[in-house]
Length: 131
Figure 1 (cartoon, one colour):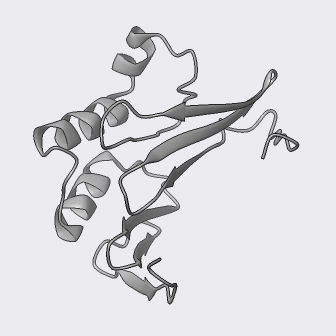
Figure 2: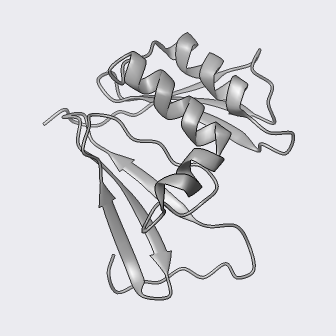
C-alpha cells in the first residue's frame, strides 16, 4: 500500500477502515506526507468525514457523528447486533449519505443500505476460507 497515494483534491477526506475477524483494525489515510496507518487502541474503530491522523481531540469532539458512534460503541464494548448497527448508522446519517455498511466478520457477511433506504438491507455472503 505504501507505494500508492490517493488524491481527491478538492474532494472530501478519503480513508479506509480495514478489519479482520480476530478483532484487529486500522484506518488507512492518504495525505501530503503519504500513507498513514492508524491502529485502534480498543477493539472497535470508526471513521467519519475528517482525517483522524493528527486530529486534535477538539476536532474529534466537534464531529457529532463521530462522537455519537464512538460513544455507542464504547457503551457496548464495540458489540452491536446488525439491527443495532443500522439504527446507529441511520441516526448518524446525513441527507447526502450514499451508503451504510455493516460487516459481520464471523459469518463473512456484508449488509448494505443504499441512499438511506434503511427498510431495504442488501445482504452479501463472502464464500472465503475461514483459515
